[in-house]
Amino acid sequence: MIQTMSIKTKEIGLTGNLNTVSLSDLLQLISVSGKTGMLFISKDNQKREIYFNKGDIIYATSWGSEDELLGNLLLIQRKILKPDLEKALSLQKLTNKRLGDILFEMRVLTRDEVIECLQSQIEEIIYSLFGWSFGEFIFYDGKQPQPEQITTQLNTMNVIMEGSRRIDEWTQIKDTFPSADMELWVIRNPKIKATSVTITVDELQLLPLISGDRTISELLPVSPLSEFHTYKALYNLITSGWIEKGEKKKAKIQEIDCEKLIYDVLIRLYSQLYQTIEQLASQKLGEGARTVLTRCFYVQKSSNPILTRLESSDNFLDFRHLKSLIDKLPQTVRFHKLINALNDLLLEFIQAINRSLGRNITQQLISQIKKETAQVVAENRWVAKEYDLEEEIIKILKMSQIC
Figure 1 (cartoon, rainbow, N blue to C red):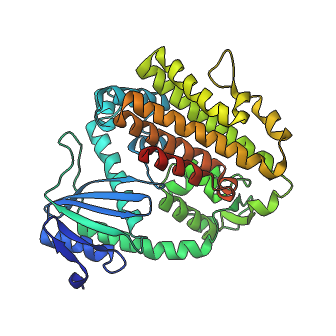
Figure 2 (figure 1 turned 180 degrees about the horizontal axis):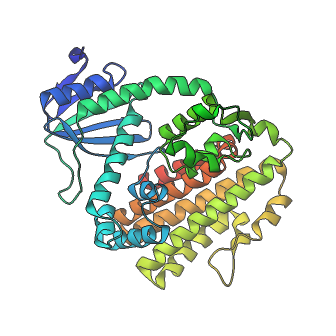
């Protein structure tokens, strides 16, 4: 039964919170009412937009830590090659066209293939919402995607049924995998009767990726499947006897120098982010980019002497000699000094881009930084979580938007 009493009505539409109105009831109300408009749902730093036309879902988009951009989805599904994606993204910055339209114009994908991948992305965005126990929502009557946006059409009631089914499956799957830091092993001689051997295409795609030293969290970024379908395939492989669970990885690598590892991750991440900023500035400002960024570097170097070791006559910034300086600092303060210096410089660079190139370009840069950070964090999940690495970057990005 739809809990209509828990929903407040305003001129702009329906408002409320998912802790009083379930997503299923909310979607059902929109479907039965045949509404046209946009449902906006947010919690913490995550946001979702779902667009409807006469009660059917036609488009959805998302921001936050769980985002899956259409380009990444096409890449992991092996619909396109990485060089094609990089070229399309470069063209997107110049033309501001939608990525799907650019790939279609490049003849990399047919329009039907773009719509098929878009539909998969929309479904995954919405299905992820079924796990939200709270979140503010508001429905804007009549609001539609931009005219140039490729849309599709999904039966909302079918989406509700599939989302509810997934929640039931997730409960069972999570009991099997209580931790994402768990290693997985392929059983060399599985005790499976020849007459009962059944394995799906999804499961076949995952088996070569299970190496024994790769945890579930490390498997997710390289899996060609969505998070839900990856977990579901792993669950089926375990219950059918093809793979087995090992120990938590962190417990097995205590002998690794954790401090050395985090510094290696920091250097890799920030050097990558600075390089992204330099490339963007060079594309937009030409030879003037080096002047702008060098001025920022010298401003921060005066208050963060540790940055001195990044100076180079050949390249803009050179991280090769930074580690030797880190080792000379007292152990109790070295991480604090390093992360503060790197963050100060990152913030200075973003603010300079904003002053020189404006808000739209800065937002593109911030999106790229989030994407690159998420990738590094996914590859080094437990150590990044231990030091709140992703939170540090998010904090700087929020500060850059306030200043």
